[in-house]
Image (cartoon, rainbow, N blue to C red; front, top):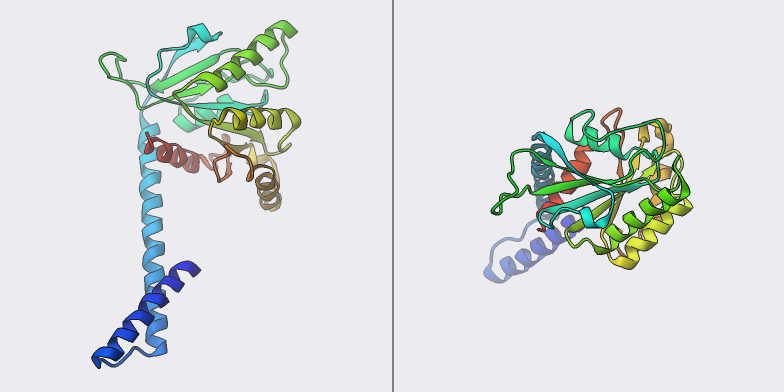
Length: 267
């Protein structure tokens, strides 16, 4: 807002100088101030209109019916590269599947479980109604990734999931954004930081999404956002802006949809 007022005042000063040269009576200080305020208000209104338009694009994108198309246990089973892919990564039981279900408004689309580590594959979801042939491709594919950090499974199996996740993050050219989910109750843990390091090294764009924000006291949210920002804002591949969500309460889902709609505008 301050920048808009400054710009408005600069323009008014220039006009005043021109008016002096042409014999037109210059604006009073009060008139200049009111004109600057109007210019700033117009700029703010334009920003709000753009945000509203983006929110509507996000709503329409996820208003469609979404379907599960493939589970990928290893890299050789990946679908052919086509639409933009966005992936959801996070520690086991951080709420990836629940967030995807809430995002698309379809309970049970992504399997949820009380058992950490239940998701064992890269699970692909796309909007329904596309044949996949002759360029008839969906605009977007969502990828639910195996959780990291804990799993009730043999170590060899957990190691295989871990390799799959890291290989996918490093080598998928259609992957345009990873949403790294962080449990709001626990913040960024060591294994989260390791994944962020990997994404930075691989130059894969990612954005932080806090989950289960309803599980902490509202008074603690600003502090959590500040702490998370301090840990991430200098990271090379981290997209600015932390999105706080609750799959259960619906908080932040419109913000996440709008962020995805904005991403699609780039491709």
